[in-house]
Length: 449
Image (cartoon, rainbow, N blue to C red; front, top):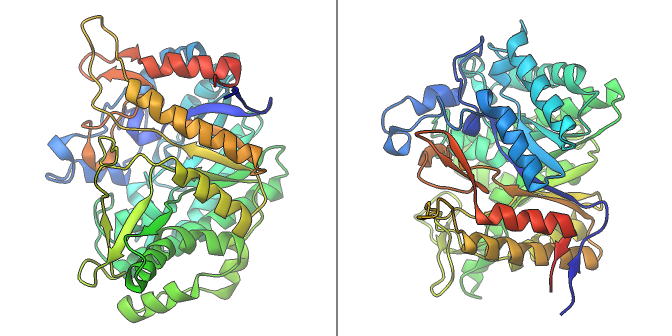
């Protein structure tokens, strides 16, 4: 088999999120976020971990950018902590917080690394949560004002903007299943939150267009293809409901101008539905320049009326390979997912904005981290990406999750996704074998056959 060579303009990158790496949770005027609050509640995070220090990227960003340059990244995707620049979520700007992101971006540009900025990766200012958080329609307005501020301050140096990372997680894990901040368990509230997250995205795109910036804007969705456990009708229907809950609820309003009717009816029946203005859908459907897709695994589901309001239960097929997150390794799902999005929803450019594997990485006697399983994982997914491009899917870039080991939300520091190993006691950074392999991929712009 021949080599897998990617288009010359293909972007190779890696990604992080502010709360997971920055630390400095109460320094230089930063306000409290919902994750600052949530992680300090006993019993919410494994081992009582918090993001107070995390990878201390706030202080060590220059070292981290130097490592990005050593790996050879074309682009680095990171998020801005809303409460670092607007401690109350609105009103007075914290200049020290803004200056941090200006210094980071300047450092990236000096290293010839293109910054890709995510405006929201789940760390809502706590002050806005006190007012109802994403269940409050006003939060969408405050987000648009925050976005406009960031565009004005950083827009001359950033060419790729992402409004939200995984609004499904922000809404459902935060407001329905209480696994994530703010830790609420109410599906009706979660559905309302999901609508306001999408509305805030559309309002931010409005502000972006009004400002006439010479850059691109999109949104990142976590999408998971659903497969029925058997070919019986009940399991097929269960897979459709999973798809509606995780995928179509966000894809449809962005690209089709409506919520999926089957899910509207289900929510109406189970939790009483949600309030929306029809004009909101026009705003949510504002034209974007690209779609970011976070893909990790597929879902295999069977009918189970007792498990949740959606009547499905996920199944783990036996004899398959799983990561430390207990996620099945299934690169074929990436192919089917992106093919479907391109055919059913949009012809705009696509980016894989997250993909990677959590493993039980250890430092060996030679002070190195030999993560060959991660290399195999990435190789398979890169080959799938190449196949998609060859078949005409407009895939323009690939961001490996994550640049470095970090705070894995409710799982604390127990899971390691990074290309770079972090010793949390000393803050030492160690390039894993996967990062050196990735450097070779970037250098040759592809894989050897």
